[in-house]
Image (cartoon, rainbow, N blue to C red; front, side):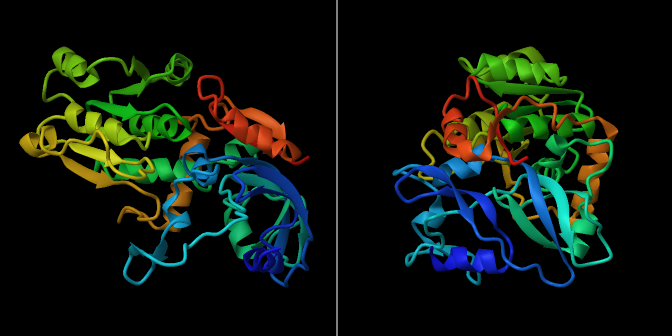
Length: 354
């Protein structure tokens, strides 16, 4: 057991059946001890946790690409620098979770309360009662809704905020119909886009997009030329790139109007092959904005972003738990990660604990 795992156990952040990503490239489920619960805290038993395919798969396999595995992040300089990598194996990850309070050392939150949060793929976790109180799952929302309230929907809302409202009153485009792309597209529509074109190469994902009120568009041929011929060169003010592909980012630059805005939401790694900045980016004065959740839009802080997420989920304007998911018992974590290698069949994977 490595030191960082010992620390997680001591803080109560992990316990019981827990998913690990190993240096061998494999994924397993290991049982860790459950530490004592501190005063003022609650213990939560996970009901559901969901894999974030865009981030977690970058840690898996012998050729894992996540930059934290290869360089050190210097928080003061805000630079990746050479040196001991920031992350080492085994990795215990996850940030899409919902569960039930099974033990409380505070009068603020009672046992039996349903809570959402961004804890790891672990059977038991501890939260400060104050934090748990702010993350109570509304009665009308399911645990499957809850797994996306703490991080995924906030990611989408924050990304759309970086459009600064320029998408309202006209069409917008989203590249990628994975979980994040589908949420970003729905938020863009809920906040004023007249039509949201959802672009993907997989027919099954385009059908999911259609089912939640989006306009599916196959990523075949020159999509930018197609849309601009149909709608006009100045029609699309904003495109959201949610695949993490530099080539798709290049297509997003091509699809927006002159002086249009591209919000980069995907997790880009390695060299930017396919992103040709000497063409439309240069000639049309396109603005590329990073819409990452690690840098909140100035209109939000953590509390207001969480409140807006709950509000939007309760309104029914955005479908969360209703998006297709492949469920496995947490002991079958390896099979769950393997299933994500079949994107034509599996949109997202959820681990069950009870």
